[in-house]
Length: 198
Length: 322
Image (cartoon, rainbow over all chains, first blue to last red; front, side):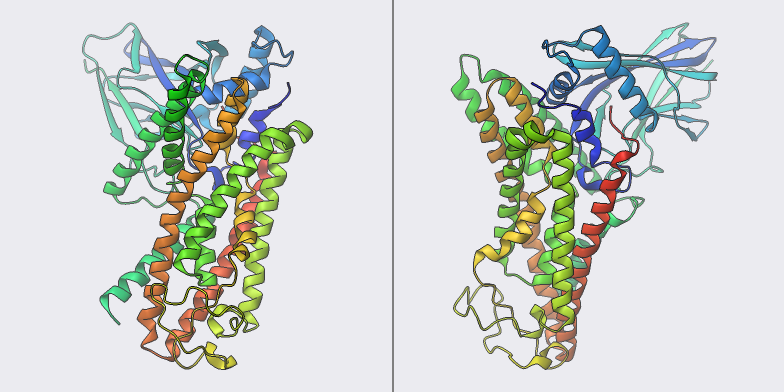
């Protein structure tokens, strides 16, 4: 019906970073999970999964259903993934790394894919860490957030998994990063530190 | 100078400072207890948002009636919370109330009128404008119109202030006597018709506010910008084939939003009057302060409107969107 043609643009038209905080409160909610791929006691990649909320998912499906058949086919999903990847590349893919205490933005991801699962939009992509980051001394931390706070990303307690050659004793710690006030200083992002001593 | 007066002055400064956050990059951190409250409210908002989707779906199920009632409640609460964060509409209302020195009742009415206008804008956008001109184009134009109108009202108020016809100068009444006398804090019975009342003499009188529809330009200017939350609910309702229920949900959301904004309006008016009373013992200082508020509020409106309008120009640039 063409009702929400290019809704993505509508959603974001009011939201240039810093310039127009008019829609600062979140309008999109994501349930996220992350899988750390480990090799030789170091993280070599983070595989991130996002599941979008119902309302936003519907708007996107409507928007990218170019042939109007009520579903997103292969080509339409590809188009969605491409548009989103380009957008997100300006925002560190909402994935923020802190290595040895130094914040590092993510400028490139691999295998960016969009799909529809149970009527919700799902994105999957992989953040390569080059060189891999050793896990011994708690040098590796990451956080998933949108610094403009248009999108709220939730990483549940069981949302972080380790895969590959996982060392025996790994622990996960979460703490607020007080160096990065967000949303008019109303809260700090939570960073997840994973360390595997030995 | 009472302690209460000082507190009021501080509160007012806080509110205006909050409004000014919109002109500055966010670098400050708020106190931790406040952050905890905000985090809790945001989690609740996420829950409610999830419920909204589920309930709109349930409207076609067997318990549609019950789903509808629950939807109204959830939409209302969602509106309350959705408006609870910093937002430009609230900054504009605070600035306007400081500049215009409208009474408490007017402040609350303004909150309800703007929330209602914003709801209407969402329905008209999804139901008509979006179909005719495209959602994005219509939305952007509405938003720009809103910001320009806000700046325009700021400029107009500022001109009136500077030309000595602002509310602080005791000129602007004489038309509508008999309105709202005896409202809270209405102490000044003798009106001051002498033009010099701006800078000298006893504290300035409250302005007579005239009929309620004089609030409409300000409410309309704020309400022209469509609320994305409402637009998303409406789109979803259209998709589920229940547009009327979506409209009802937007009405409930707007009512919720109005409650939150009215609370802020109330706080602003109380703080403003407290601060003015604080200075009212000081004769000349009271008049100066009142005039200062008038100019400050108007200037803030003008700046907010312009900054927000210029912000829309960046729409051509990169977007944060997933």
